[in-house]
Amino acid sequence: MSVRRAIWGEKFEAIEQSLSEVDADLYGYIRDFAYEEVLAREGLDLKIRELLAITSLIALGSPKELATHLEGALLNGASEREIRETIIQSALFVGFPNALGAMKMFHALLRKRSEA
Image (cartoon, rainbow, N blue to C red; front, side, top):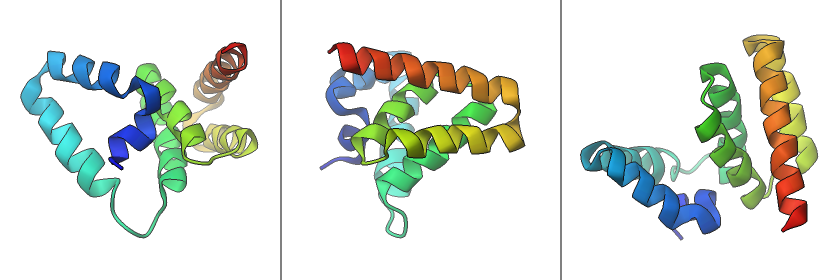
């Protein structure tokens, strides 16, 4: 299975189209290097990689990408508690306001998933 499909789940086609529309060449680098080379490496499973991505995206202040990887973490076996703890841990290094925003986003995602 493609790493992108494992992380993006049912949103695979929509995310792929959206990224392609921004710039096909840039999307090619994201697809081929970031996802299919770096994220596909042995040594860390996708769950751990997604938890690390969450922390990095909180630090960068990238909410759209953060939402994608919060969902990706759940799809790849991270528990709600593991994600909450990752967000709380990030507060120490990237600030409480960023972590609070991420936690709000995570709770909104959980509500949306429970309604589906």
